[in-house]
Length: 291
Image (tube, rainbow, N blue to C red; front, side, top):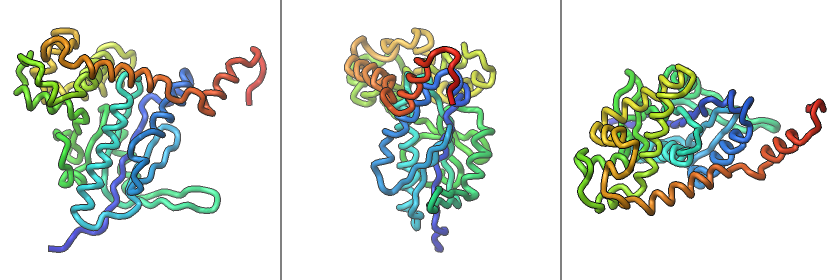
């Protein structure tokens, strides 16, 4: 059997609402860039990252040459999206991403970086048509997905469930709630993060003034409601209290950790060049031109 041709995988991330954020809340732009700068994927030399405006590209510069490579790249690039999802919980900053295989080229000239390729074009065009929040996995990557649950979305893309703690609880509980004892936290120690995400998605689809934003949130909510019907019903009926899922105090330590992480990421970007520039501009005298 002949091995497929060498492959690159491209994670294409679009930070949603970036234009409005730039105009009305530039500090959130500084926070977003600071969070992106801390992603775990930067520690692995197997990947490179390009950021321009609201777009983030993460890819493998060394092409995959066998299925072991492909499994590794799809796994770690999906985890990069999971890492961003985790860091943005509670920040009211959202993203839509696609993971696709194909041709992508990136090289440096004396004065600029050049990047192009069919995978980039396909990712850009597809991402704009997908009304969701989170990650969609292209069919070219699906055979190499080993660790994340997915659900069909379009002919070419599947929705990826990025919160593995929700999945662990679902499997441990059989989707019956409340679970009778605290041992369930052993299967899903970071569950409060996933519940906070669901709560924020629910609020977004119910209250956001823009219909298109509500539609994206509704699609994302619907995928979770279909996969975790018992969990979602229990949370909605109890105002997203964790006691709807297990006895009081089950996730107290995890709740404290989540709250500290949210506070920490709220401060991300403070003191950065962009943040200092914003502060300086706001302290200029009224009427003074800024160039």
